[in-house]
Length: 222
Image 1 (cartoon, rainbow, N blue to C red):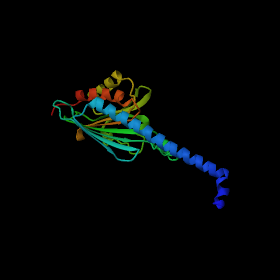
Image 2: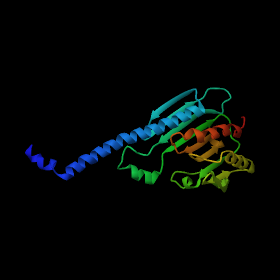
Image 3: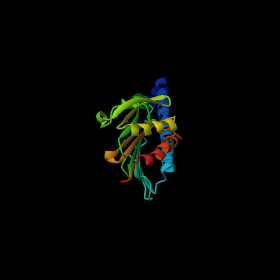
Image 4: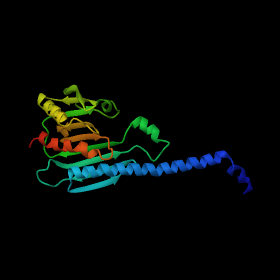
């Protein structure tokens, strides 16, 4: 035992103990913070869409979650919503700063399956988000593009005809703050609407509700 006494009295040993305690405390703090954000986002999704059935899956420890919401009611404009949340690794204090620098924020991706077909393709995409790797608009070459100000941010508006442009502009005018929305995409070829949001606590429902009210007016009857 005597051979370890010298190590136990070295300042570096106490630094090691303190650092280990710091990492452990950060781990539990980070998991708790991520869990609260995820639960808040999923609660908002349930309150906005009120599905008839749902399924929730953990797909990545403390940083990945998935939900499927199903709708059986007649007359509702959606048949299903898939939601995927990927979180910053707040539980890993060593990797968190790197991830924050690269990925910048938590991400919530929604895929809404429409029962009826939208008349045209259109996008509202925030300028900075449009430059991220993996963010692309498949039919960009055949869409018209212009720059609009939505709240305090700059968005690109992609559209096919003046009619759909007018609907997008009216939507912005009626909802002057994008909140946590960074991309709205309506894709008739896939009969889907895609939405990208930053899942901040208490903010998902506020930003999502106007979109959920607007979409039914955009789709046509088959």
